[in-house]
Length: 449
Image (tube, rainbow, N blue to C red):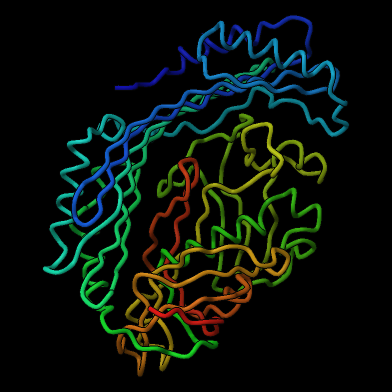
């Protein structure tokens, strides 16, 4: 069973690179991940996998020339060889005129987000959870999905004296229940600990949606009021992070928010912020340059505040890093990894009751960007799309394709859920979002099922 290298172990490895002579500065980044994944389909477990990946990235700076090398050999020898390779690259690349320097010695928040039970979860334990979920599927229905448990540690050390180390765990359980007349239902749960995931509740939710999705109505596409459950909202927020909040795109005019600082870009009820140290999310107290993380308001009361920055983009913009650097080399620039859509005071049932006619959407899939400057994306509804009539769920409808501006949807938001859920697209990211009631949402086509 893999285990933590630990802060002391990381510092011992990094020291071999930091002692490299003949250069101005050196930075060592450790990324160590491991975990297991149990997959099931047709209500049977068919695959259990395990993986571990340990990597070092060494960045060497010589007269504003920056070289980067990586290795999977997490030993003093491996670190030193990578440092020497990075030094060779730094001697031949062009100078970086905007080089901001490495992070100086700075205090970072200490977070305790490592759960040994989750880090050491066995295939048998995941199988038991999958079996409990599958047991919620009624006769004639089958469940498919995956239960993944993961652990990681990240360390950063540089010749400016900055040393950071942190570890965390994560568990995720996702399922789609199918059956009857081609109906399907979806549910998922993300948490920092396996103990916070209820497999039976996940299976029960998906089974109920699948049972309710039988014999869907063929409804015409068009613009409808919608109630989006958190899984669907997570898609909107995640794509807005991609096309809107990154500092590089913002400075280069390629963001949907470029030039809009101080503008009203969403309904006054909408606030979005990034906060890795918030107790209700996953994440580390520092970014991949060793800068401390904390709360950064992005949209507050519907008004765009600012984008996020790393050291280099911050220098170009004339602002300090907000603690959002990704691992170097990184052509994408800084990115928010721990988004929150601030909750409101409504329940999903209240949203439905306030909708004379509209749609209830469980989730989106096959989503992609249409026009980043317009914040427009496209995709499909899936695994639970229902007609709302006279403030009640009237029955299932066939799935739709949507083409919609995210900012337009947030501007048309009139109610926000009081209960937020965690969603995560990859291990170092997490978003916590609530359901939304949106008065206008464009469905451009209809599926045949």
